[in-house]
Length: 156
Image 1: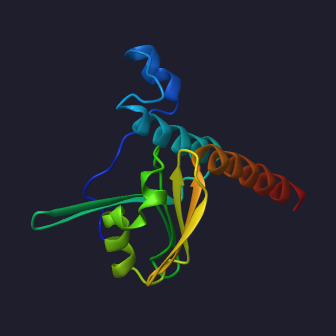
Image 2 (image 1 turned 90 degrees about the horizontal axis):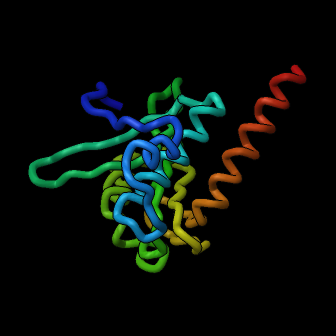
């Protein structure tokens, strides 16, 4: 990983966005950002902040990956997640161009998650298996993971 040169800012509570601006609906153009914020806020409020946001530009080609977990010892990406609020990518995974670019440059990634609105699925790529999971289920998994992590740490 190279030095951080840009970043994303997330509200810690997605409700704050609706309070400051207008409420949004399920098909609003801003819902994708709200869903991404909600997922990030779960990780952050659960005390997990050991992930990164990856973005790059090479010539006219730009890309980003929403969540990247890095092995601190090797400084290599080990897991990634793309937060989406659409089933489009589960139906056509080749459209995940930024994700595929990132994976082809980072062969150490073992877990690849892409959220969807309602679809489950798997897609095999030369870089690994992409798991598609509805964002509601992914959010539940985050909560469950964080709860059991804290519970097992408190027993030690």
